[in-house]
Image (cartoon, rainbow, N blue to C red; front, side, top):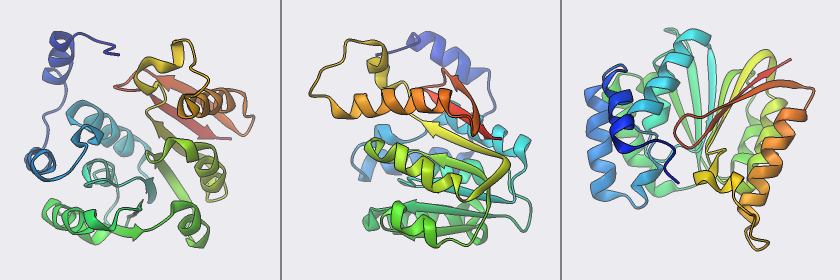
Length: 213
């Protein structure tokens, strides 16, 4: 489902901050060499993540779902000189392209890569995170949320991507569609969970912003 017409999407992007050259290069290489390039965060949402990070001014960031590194670079733009971003992805084949662009972006020294199952890695991180971005396997969103809550503090921000799930959240539910059911339950959970304050933003495929109480 397209929430906005292409011409309106073009207008929005054209009246937002320009996409950095390094991210344009990463986008081109991802489309040329990596499967499922639509998973890229993209210009508009990337600038949203960058600005949110700069507003929040986190010392520590956790990202679940690195893909080729686009969103990590955007989030890293808001880190202080001694800040760190931990990013987790299960696909070890993407490690090299991630590292190459992290280094080219100038944020290489601030970004720590982890390869493997996020639910096994997160409990081992001895870090309290100011900002978390969840953008990985949708079936595991509830488990990711519980895992990261234990690594946050009052005032920490948790961002959850793809929560509109291409509009399927407002369509009749196919009983066989387990992923959409999980997304629906997750959205309901965030709204009703007393541990966080939540607002769902209609940005791209849906971005939920939750503040830990």
